[in-house]
Image (tube, rainbow, N blue to C red; front, side, top):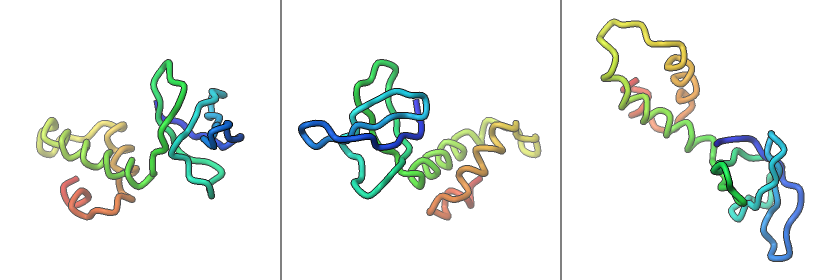
Length: 101
């Protein structure tokens, strides 16, 4: 799962305790100290989460779209979900991704 989270507190070991947009409280060992909110990823039964940089997510989406591009026939209209993901990846730092989309 990926979600937005805010920092609530720290535990006794100095690890950030965060709350996701869905009310789940998790430990976030890699939480940046100067941030109020971040994207995080976690599993269904997770007790902790990992911070996801938005730029990294955009780049990953871009690479996935490049891999999926061959699934569609040339000239075939892409589904709406693909078009939305293209918008999300448009901010990726690397031009090589955008040039292949």
